Length: 248
Figure: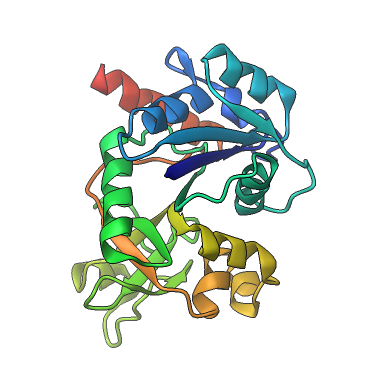
C-alpha cells in the first residue's frame, strides 16, 4: 500500500497559520488534502500536524489527522513520526508539503507510478523554469540530472554553471530544472533519512534532500509542465488566489 502523509505545521515566521489560510473559499490544507485524496495510486492519506486547529480542519473534511511533536525539526521527521504513531510500514510513502495548493491528483498518480516503475529509493518532481522565473532566485531549488533521469545534485545556486556566458543569458543556453518538494519514498529510505545526522551539504545549502543523496540514495525525477506555486509569504498566497480565479 502507498500511504501519503501531509506534514502541516502551524508556526511559520513569514505566514503564521499557513495551512489554514483561505484560498478562494478553501483552506490551503483542504486544497492539498483533496488533491491527495483524489489520487488513485494512494491508499491512505494522513495529515501530520503539530496543532489541534489544523487537525480539527482535517476532521471537518472527513480526513485523518495525527498530532505529532511540535519540536520536530522538519516535515520529513513529522511524516515518519506519523507513520510510527499509526504503526505503519507501507510499501511506499508520499511526503507532500501542505504549501503546494495547486497540486493535482493526476500529478501525484504520475509520481507514484514512476516511483514504482523505476524502483528508486526516492522519486521527486521537477519542472522546467518558465520565462518569468529567475534561475538565480535562491528560493527556487535547481536540480541537475543524469541521462537516466537520476538527480545528480540539488542546489539553491543556478546549476550547471555556463562558462563564458553572462549569467543573465544562462537560461537561454540550456534548460534549467526546478525541484518541487514532493517525494515518494521507499519506507526503508524514509527510515534511513530520519536516522542520519544532517550532512555537511544539507547544512550548507539548507536542503534536507541532500542528506540522503550524499548518503548514496538514488533520486529519480518525474517531469511535469504543471503550473505549481508554493506558498511561503502573503504575496505567494495572493498569486495562488489569482491563478485559482483564472481557472474558475
